[in-house]
Length: 354
Ligand SMILES: Nc1nc2c(ncn2[C@@H]2O[C@H](COP(=O)(O)OP(=O)(O)OP(=O)(O)O)[C@@H](O)[C@H]2O)c(=O)[nH]1
Ligand SMILES: [Zn+2]
View 1 (cartoon, rainbow, N blue to C red):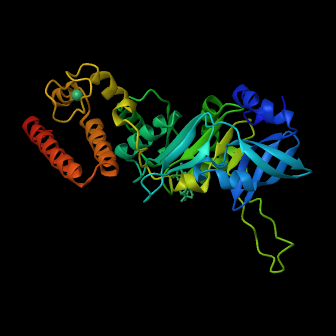
View 2: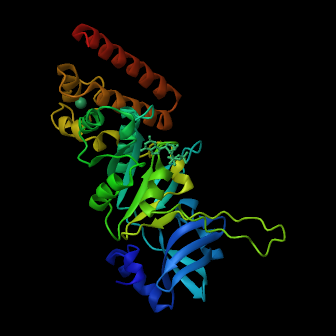
View 3: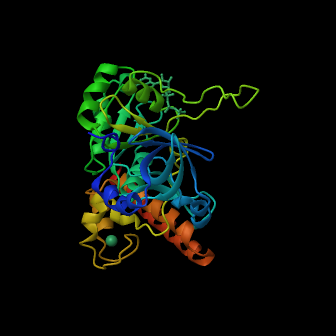
C-alpha cells in the first residue's frame, strides 16, 4: 500500500487530484500547522510547505488547509508550496467565538470523533450530548469513550446512561492507565487508514490515551533551531499522529478549545435521534416542540417516554441557536417562552415527584 493510501487517500481525493497531477503537482496531507509552516505527508515522505500567495489571498480562513486536509502542492525536494486544498469529505467546525458569521474549521476529513469524558467529576451527560450533536451535525460518526473507569465502582451504570441518550454509537469504558485494556478496544474501533479526532475537556486523559496508543510519548518535532542564535525550541507538535496499527488521530490545539457552539443554519432537532423520530408525529410539520398543540415530543416528555434530560438539552441548544440568530425582540419572546416551558416541565416533575 502506498504511503498516501496509508494516510487515508480515498478515491474522492484521487479523483479531485487528477487535474492537479496533470499540472505536475503532488498530493499531501496536512499533519501539523505552525504559523506559516505546514507539515505534509506525501508519497515521498514528510514535506515542509507554505501556502501560495494566491491561495492565502483568495480564501476565507476556514477554507485554508487544516489538520487532516489533502492539498495539491508544488514540490522542491523536501519543501513545497501549497496551491490548492482538495474538496473536504467533512470538516470539524464551530462557529467562530464572538464573530457570529464566521465558521471555524478545526480539522478536516475525519472518519470518526472520539469523544472523551472522564468518569470523575468530568462526567456530564448534558455536555456529552452537546458534543454528540455537534459532531453529528458535521457528518462525523461519534464514538464515546468513558475514561478513568478505574475511579468508579460501577462503570457500567455510566455506560447505560449514555446509551439511554439514544445515539447509535459505540460507548467504550476505558482506563488510559491500563494499556492492555486500551489496546483491546483500540483494535476493535481504530481501523487502519482511518482518521479519528480526539475531543474532550481538559484533564479527561487525551494525552495519556494518545501516548498509550502510540506506545511512546508523542514526539515534539521541533528541534533546536540553528537559524536562531538563541537556540530557541520550535515547538511544532504533530497534530495528526499515525498509530502503530495504521490508524490516525488528530489532536490539534484547536480541538482542545472546541467550544460547542452551533452552526448558524443548523437545525437542532434533526440531529437527535429520539426527537427526530417523535417529530414525525407532531401535528405541525415545522413544530419546534415548545408550545405547539399536538406536539408528540412534549407529550413524550410528559409520559416519561423521552428522557427529560434529552428534552432539556434540546431546549438549551434551541435557545442558544436563537441567541445567535434572533434580533432583540425575537430573543425576548423566545426567552419568555423558554421560561414558560421550563416552568411547565418543573411543575410536571413536582406532580410526578421525581
Ligand atoms: N485514574 C485515572 N487517571 C487518568 C486516566 N487517564 C488519564 N488520567 C490522569 O488524568 C490526568 C489528566 O490526563 P491528561 O492525559 O493530561 O488529560 P488531557 O485530556 O490530555 O488534558 P489537557 O492536556 O489539559 O487537554 C493525568 O494526571 C492522568 O494521569 C485514567 O484512565 N484513570
Ligand atoms: Zn413537536
